[in-house]
Amino acid sequence: MNTELNRKLQACVVGATGYVGQRFITLLADHPWF
Image (cartoon, rainbow, N blue to C red; front, side, top):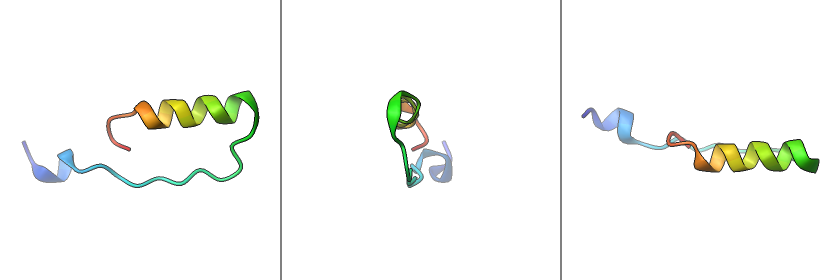
């Protein structure tokens, strides 16, 4: 596979409060690209 596709991206989440924010961070943490 291409090494560019295997590299993870860095992401930053600002202001993730409450249930929706915590759920978004959980989904982002489990995503294979981030």
